Amino acid sequence: MKFKSRKDWWLSIIVWIAMIFVLGSGVYVLVDKTLDILGFIITFSLSIILPIFILWMWLTTFYVIEDNNLIIRFGPFKRNIPLDNITSVEKTKNPLSSPALSIKRLEIVYGQYNSVLISPFDRKGFIKILSKRCQHIKIKKFIF
Image (tube, rainbow, N blue to C red; front, side, top):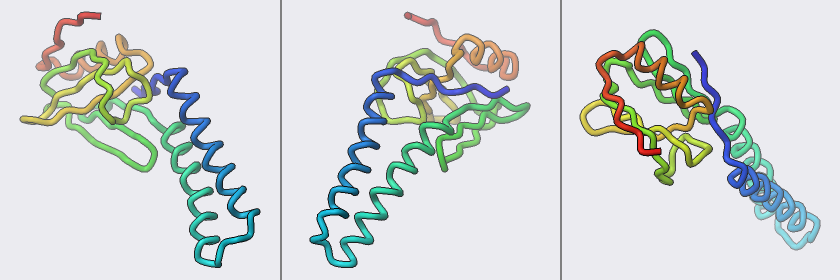
């Protein structure tokens, strides 16, 4: 089952403004014509590659629960977590960097000391399916 990432409105604004700023800055510097060839190549590359990379991560963040694995996809990055290794799930608003596009997150603890923060749009549905596939996991009491 595939779950799209929840996207906070305020984060959407930040991401789009950052992309417009990078593109605008790149165009301004390229039009200014005071760059040597190396500066031109670097500026052109960054002003095109960086927004494409951000957009790639923004549009392709999702989570898939398969028979034996939880797959977390975040742009070019992919993490496979065997369902047998997941020990607990807990709702959180932890702001640490993670493959989550919202502050409404789930902390998934797996292995001995590993955890990942994700933000499926349907948290209740995600937890329901995950608990059916991983009957050994502990679903911690939710405060909010």
